[in-house]
Image (tube, rainbow, N blue to C red; front, side, top):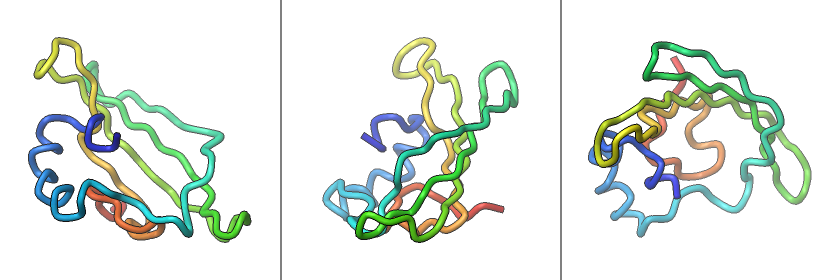
Length: 106
């Protein structure tokens, strides 16, 4: 699912990593808990930034809080008016295991 919602450019740059890891991302513990609040900021008419915090859950308990920012862009390919994730930034890219395509927040 992560790959399916990426922009064509991010799909192209991460496809081999997905294949090398048998198309599996993340891990079982800790894992990302439910996100309850998101902040959205328009960067342009075809680019949006979505930021949120998420609980890191292990053995049913929150052990820490993660932070993420996604850049979502409008693409004309493969479909007209297609929106996809063009960048993933995490405070700690390894906090839920393997997160292909994620970079450390700047």
